[in-house]
Amino acid sequence: MKQLRVLVIMHPDLIPPDSTEGYQEQQINEWKTEYDVVSTLRAAGHDVRPLGVHDELKPIRDEIEGWKPDVVFTLLEQFHGEVIYDQNVGSYLELMRVPYTGCNPRGLMLARGKDLSKTLVHYHRIPVPAFAVFPIGRKVRRPRRLGLPLIVKSVIEDGSWGISQASVVDTDEKLAERVAFIHERIGTAAIAEQYIEGREIYVGVLGNERLRVLPLWELRFANLAQGSWPIATEKVKHDTNYQERRGILHGPAEDLAPEVRARIRQMARRIYRTLELDGYARIDFRLSADGIPYFLEANPNPEIAESQEFATAARHDGIPYSDLLHRIVTLGIRRATGTVSGD
Ligand SMILES: Nc1ncnc2c1ncn2[C@@H]1O[C@H](COP(=O)(O)OP(=O)(O)O)[C@@H](O)[C@H]1O
Ligand SMILES: [Mg+2]
Image (cartoon, rainbow, N blue to C red; front, side, top):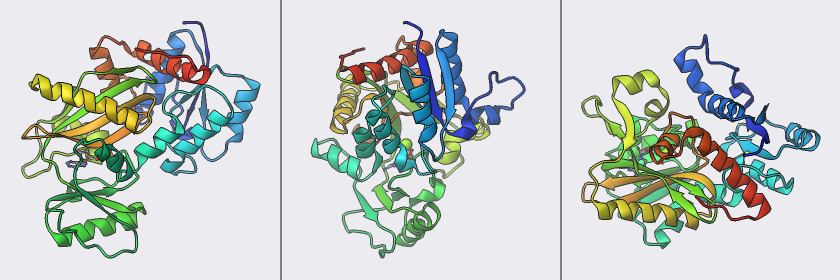
């Protein structure tokens, strides 16, 4: 691949140092994705410039006009501190006609809402957990069709923000409490979903027109405290000590019937297309004990630190990390130029 000018946009606090030496593991974890992307692209010979973006578009514009990057690598997940503005940054890059990595703004919007995305996917006869949305200021009444237990989440936030053991509720009283928690502490509408007991399966998908589906990946909870729900809480996702203590591991999903495996892969493709995703995304499922895969959510632009699920699954499938980043960059450039690129 020829040498490229790559502008990597990210939160200003996450601009990585040149080396991880002298930092604690927890500190490194904060900017690991940014560090991995910047250092790997540099090691591959590209001219890489990290740019911190918080609440101004002008620095992006100045770089695009002054430095003329070949591609913008988007690691930015918010603007003005709002996660739902990530699609607007994508729109801005689109309007600037600069190639950028990851998902287009329409896909970001369709995948964002945990209610809208499920409604669209359900239309294609893919099983989704039954759910109800509770807007701020509305009284909480559980619809009859929804049995307990339920899991209560923000309808738009991600990264498991607001998700803890208390999110799974088995009484109407706890349901009302947890909905109030989401309204007050997270500040968004809440969604209560049927709690699906079962295995947690992730499927990475890479591509614009032609898609490459990565091996099914499983999040395992080997050593949970007695009575804990096996769910990906904030701690499970971000606390490395907790991960070690509780045996939180991810790896290839084993012992799946071939037809279940094929069905999940087919569903992942269909969901990717239904939600108009491109670039790269991770589609999450819960596989119930009776073998039914339920769609949980789609994550366009999932985290891609080298050790995380997406990149590990890619490596397992014969795509080393630097190749993965090149593919992501190429997909961004080809979308902008209208050329088809496959796996
Ligand atoms: N309907 C559900 N049934 C069982 N577990 C769920 C359900 N919804 C979410 N979870 C658990 O909570 C985690 C976070 O939920 P998710 O909807 O993916 O939110 P986020 O966008 O914050 O990642 C999931 O990875 C899963 O472990
Ligand atoms: Mg999730």
